[in-house]
Image (tube, rainbow, N blue to C red; front, side, top):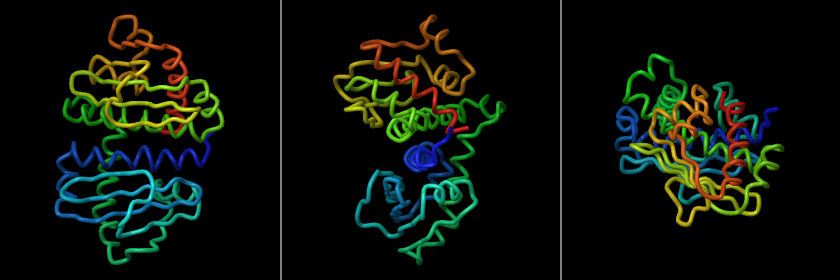
Length: 253
């Protein structure tokens, strides 16, 4: 069963967070934010806030309220925020009405561009450049969503509580991203990059393998058997993480 709060946390801290990487990877997105200098606070009741900044041709998404911000978008509930993501509701701007044109134009174009990469067709995935960006964004989406599920979803909390404290280092070799999943007292945090002293490691041998496993077209156990997916270190950490990873598709379908 899909939990509305968990869905809102994923939409904000996993899906929209990808704008940060989209603006680094995609030329059209880079062009959209060129010369823009604006910071937006997303505030939905019951959902941890996030601050999205565009400055000097870069986009940065941070959890929490980071001052100063030019625009504040308020949502009365997690459901209100989810409906905005679905295009069925509008945010309530409580600060920065003078910046509303950015929201209606460049921001909408950016989210459409993000959807273009996160909802691929089989034909699009045949393009190596498109497939690379799709895989990177899909990996970030999945592993950032994993933490939100572990911290908010009823079953997810049970699975998260079974992950021993420590860090799982996740790597996509040959041009892919690196990600750290940190477990502490049953709470999960996902970060870009590799933390030191990881207790367990999961490595995909290439972008194609990561893409296939994450979209379900390749069996992970087959990849472990033939070496395309490597798991090392304290295996119980990865086993319990995989239970959370199995919950991700229900939220991101």
